[in-house]
Structure formats: C-alpha cells, structure tokens
Amino acid sequence: MVCGRLVISFKQASSEARLGTLRPATALLLCGSWPTRAGLARELAQTPKPLSHLDFSRCAAVYGVLDIGPFLPLKPRKHQSAMLLGAHFHRKPPIPPMKTINKSSKLAHVLYDIRGPIMDRAKQMEDEGQQLIKLNIGNLAVFGFDAPEEVQQDMIRNLPNSAGYSDSKGIFAARKAVMHYTQAQGVQGVTLEDVYLGNGASDLIAMATNALLDDGDELLLPAPDYPLWTAVTSLSGGTPVHYLCDEANGWIPDLDDIRSKITPRTKGIVVINPNNPTGVLYPDHVLREIIAIARKHGLVILADEVYDKVLYDDVKHTAMASLSNDVLTLTFNSLSKSYRACGYRAGWLVVTGDKQAASDYIEGLNMLANMRLCANVPGQWAIQTALGGYQSINDLVREGGRLRHQRDLAYELITAIPGVTCVKPQAALYMFPRLDPEVYPIEDDRQFFLQLLEATRVMLVQGTGFNWPRPDHFRIVFLPHEPDLREAIGRIAKFLEDYRNKHSKAQAESLTAE
Image (cartoon, rainbow, N blue to C red; front, side):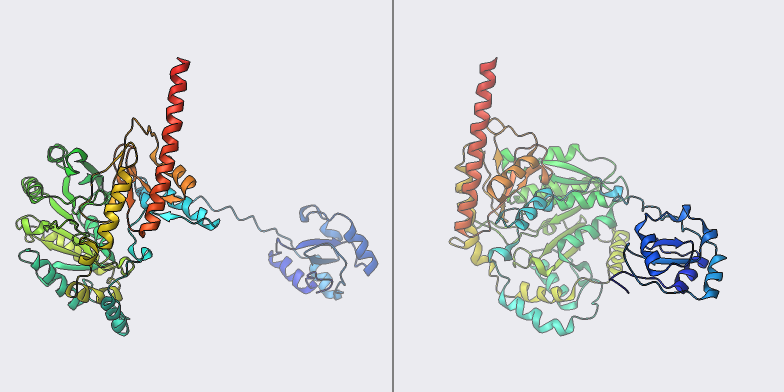
C-alpha cells in the first residue's frame, strides 16, 4: 500500500489473468516495458485504455490500482514476465440484473387499511418530528390501560417453563380454563379437545379459513367488517361476499340481504358480535335468525366475540354457540381487549355444534395446528389467570368507569359536529360515524383522511377500509385520556368546518357561473 492506493502484486495479477478472474473493480494499466518510477508516473498521467483495446503482445507487466496516482511499483521477476506474456486474458461476462420480484397474486385483493397508507404517512410525519394523536387502532396499552397485575405476574413466574414447545393446541391449564369459560356461557358439549390456542384470535381466524375454503368458495361477511376477515378469506382462496348491516336499524344485519347472497359455493357466515367497527351488540332474536339461515343452508358459523366483556349500559352478551347446538360454530376470542393484553398474542378458538359431521374439517384444523407447532407459550400462561381472576374490565365499563366516560364524551363531541351522525356504541372501543354526503361530498375517503391527517395530525381510518361500500363513514377509537380526546375531536371538527366552508363557497361560485 503506497499513497493510500492498493497495488496488486505482479504474481497475484498474473495468476488472476491465467484464471480469467481479473477483478472488474481493478483498473488495469498495461505498459509496453517495465517503467522507471518517473516513466510510470508519465504513463499514469495518460488516459488508460480499456482492457479490450490493449495490445497484449506488448505487455511486460500488469499493475492494478484503484485510482490513478503515484505509487511504488513492485519489480517483477523475469520468469513472471514470461509467464504473463503467454497468459490468456478473459473478461467475465457481466452479471445480469436480478429480475423484478412481485408480490403474489393472492394478495391482489388483500387490504388492511387499519395499518395501511394512512399509517405509512403517519409514520413519515413522526419521523419528521411531528406528534400525532392516533385514533386508528384499539391498542389499549399505549393509552394507559394496563393488563391486570396478577396476569403479568403469572406470566413472569412461568417464564422459566416457557422455553419449549407446548402441545400444538396449547397448554392444558389454559385450554381447561377456556373450556370452563365457554361452558359458563351456556355452550353445551365442550371438551378439552375442542379448544385451540393461538397467537391472538387473528392467528386462529387465518387457520380456520384456510382449513375451510377451497378456491372460489364464498364466505359471507358483514359490511362494515373487521378487515382481517375479508383479507384472510381472499388469502385462503375464497371469495368474500358482504352482507349489509343496516345503519337505520342500529347496524343490525339485514337478514334478507344475507339470504339473497347465498349460493352453492357459500361455505359459512361470519358474525362479529359485539361488532367492530360499529360497537353494536346484536339481540338474541337476530342471532337465532342467522343460525336458522345457517342450519337451512348447511353453513358454518364463525363467531368473532373478542369484545364480549367490553359492554356498556348494562347490556348482556349472548354467546352464539349457546344457541347453535346443532350447527357447527367456531367461536374466536382473546385476551387482547377485555384484559388489555394485545401484545401478549393470546387467543382461542372453540369448536362446537355438530362436530361429527365436521370430522374431516376438524382433521384439517388439527393438521394446521400441528404445522405451526404451537402458539407462543408465555402468552398461554396468562389465559388461566385472566379468565379465573378478578374481572377488572367491569370497573372500566360501569357508570363512572374510564371507558364508559370516554365513550359518552366521544359520542357527545362527534355528534355535535354539523353533518355528522352516529349510532351510539353499546360495546367495544369504537364508533363508526357517518358524514352526510350532502354536507361532505367525498369521492375518495382514503385521500380525504390523508388530508385530515396532514392538516390536524389526527389519525383515523376511512369507512371503506372496513369494506363499507360508500365513502361516507370513518372509525374513531375513544381510548385517549379526556384532554387528548377533546383535542383530537376539536381538530377534526375544525377540519370538517373548513371543508364545509370550502365546499359551500365552491358550490355558490358554480351556481353564479351558471
């Protein structure tokens, strides 16, 4: 190494030349005779010729440098020069550029806008140093809703026992706790073998749909829905078919619409109760009607009941499986919401109803459970303590509790905005307000809420992200503390006021021009 530049020895260069492995990063300078130090400097001052244009018959030496500049050449031995003179020089063919790698076509219809383009823009804004108020997702811990202390401690105590795989369906104690919990809801015929533990309910929803659907099979889903259901249906090869929930009737499923959308390819119906995103709790007579439809057409019922304990105004939740003893029912639940433990990823699936007729399907579930080995074991240890311990969620949803107070506050503030209406939620953590199209003529609601994010630094999710067919709704989470909740909705109200004024002015100018 001289003057900070690499000099390749003559022996190394000649060896590379014989083998045809002269490195492309090396600038090759070939001289007609072995130069003096001054002669080499003069040679280097000239523009080097490309390797393909050099007269190899004149070669006496090869020097490799990474840059043009003075260096002290290494004098080759005579036999090395002779050897190099007879060497054959080859340039390795250029490596072709890697072809473009595209995502699978299976993802063409998969969307999850709760963490979609609006969230991507929000992350960019945070990277720029902006502070946001996020009302897009029900992540309770970040708003100060802690998991019960005894649940945390039980996980810590059992951590030394969590390094190995568990049974593919889950640890015995947790599955037994889920079995007892399900039996206490009035569900008949539940055994330990009917319980599967997973990395949250989401993991088990994907497993259940993959085991159920062939390419082209249809699954009936509510509109609006929790978008994971639509995504996993498509990813499983199925076709999501949305039945409407009627806002004018308190977001209750339209039973006639359900009946009209059943075809020979329909395999099942999804019921999200309590509902996300609307916060509505379905009455028993509606559940019985849906069960009757499933019974008549031989459909599997997939009951998403993750919010079964997040209930306001003293309403009562009825487990769908308690009403469907003769219809195969898959019930999904988790610790994420009722126990404020989203990150523990601890959920369960319970299979009930006519299990004998579904023996082949259950075999498929078992196969998929075995393939993933097991759910995360530390999270499993939390289940028994959570289900059997003090139900602190009741303190949050009763009158005067934090969740109930913030539900009431958010509803009051949102519905005070002109042109905004909302069905008051009876459960869960969300509201799904409507923007009157006469007041807020929105064509692209994703773009609208991107603009709202940039103008207000408040993050929401547009209604079409929940597979609602029109750009006139949005979902709002009411989890922030009261000062932040007031601030966020105040910013939303100001943005909507500016939008109304802008639209009114544009409309007036249009009428004047006519």
